[in-house]
Length: 75
Image (cartoon, rainbow, N blue to C red):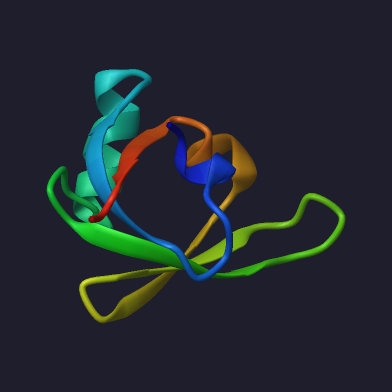
């Protein structure tokens, strides 16, 4: 499943990224790593960015970026 498909408030585990190596490096530089738990705090209207909590920090991610982040449900 992709981060973009997750409902607001649901905790998920990041399992990987799609995209170029440069794109993946950018996510790593922002502190988003495979194995991290994350949840969407807010989704801006009109296809705006998502506010995501990761490791106690908040990241604003565009929907195109969230579409390339692979996640699984935390059980």
